[in-house]
Length: 541
Ligand code: NAD
Image (cartoon, rainbow, N blue to C red):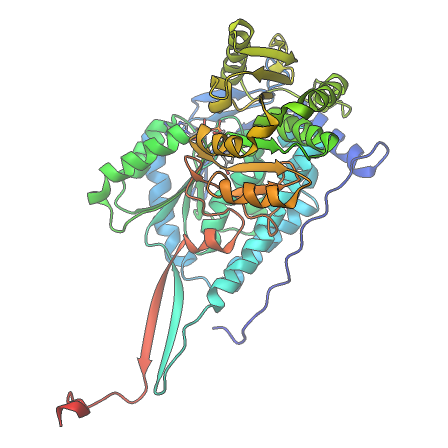
């Protein structure tokens, strides 16, 4: 029984460590990197209290050294997915009934474990699994996931505090029930923080979860599981399965108890999931919540009044950090003719100074792209651009997969604003630039708005307030996260809630109260103190 209305500690953003040469954190993360690199971890499925080893395994290799093996993971069969669902439903009985402050304590402890003893395990595993340089790992696998956990706990309490008014003689109250059934979390490779957030945000609100991480993130997903176990998350609240995504998904979506999906990944997969859920709608006990954050074709548009060095830096960072594999990465850029060559020359200078290679060498700004499929796709678009009359490779344009999946940061300049790399999400270190006539600023805003099916992030650079205002109106629906005089990447939990609409997702803003509201089903309780004893109203006379 609760004997108080408890406040949680105020969430503040986790400070980003610098990893400058000679810093203790640099030594620690490199030592952990070596230990993982030379180790051989065997990652089981996590079903209830069991670590299930099916014997049907796949190896895990760093994208920057794809012949080197750092471990194996076990693939689920249909029966394991069914067991995971059954475990969820059994665990729900106690978990959904647990008082919120005990749930909160588990996730706040997880945040503290990541901030402290697990920080370099999270970072090193992310450097290896997803080929992130240490800065990219730190802002993702340490700071962002810590922020998700701490801020979501605070948002949970704000949701619970939101209560209706009560007229005289009655007491109205709302309780925020977890969904009836279980939630399915499908996570992408590119952010360890997203992998951690999608299952935990639903679990925090009292839900039980089947979590299917990306095959390309399992090495770092295992560390998340270790953290949650040490934080005291009861067995069976989050069950983890890997393997054939179609088989796993079809099994999950066939369950009458499926009550919601928390997905991040590509648009095509999400549309397919939505169709499957629609086709199964008669099976379900409740209408499932469908939350998906999907692809992007994120833009930068510079006005003739913009500062050329600022625009160039936004392109260099926004398009190429983590090899352009952020859903928010700038991938189409609109430059005014009067400034284009100056901006592009700055970008070229930056690119020529980037070092590319393993994240273990901390002087490398650029590391490898995630897998061979991505490498081959990027190489084919680059090759095509070399052939096409309407495109020119302005910088980069080389690639090599002999040791790791390395694609050099590439700038394509096109004369066709509908050129395929202006419209297709490539998810790699390739940015395409279209140069517009300075007099066509307003028309170019329309072009930005209508060129892509996506609407995730976008940035406008200008020194003229009227044009900033015009852009904000013209591009109102072109981005869910809209940046003024800043790059379109790097959203911080609690400061820039993240997500977009159109083909970029349901815009339920990860790292916000709006997102957590999707994982509860409110029940209103009205209690009357002195109940009427006569049906007749006064107007009846
Ligand atoms: P992906 O679509 O290949 O995979 C995402 C997840 O879906 C993985 O777990 C994968 O195994 C699973 N999956 C793949 N095919 C499936 C199927 N047929 N049925 C069910 N599940 C299936 O995406 P990715 O390469 O891991 O991540 C990159 C994509 O994610 C990009 O499109 C990027 O824009 C998007 N993304 C979006 C956001 C956002 O907030 N909007 C954030 C990160 C990534």
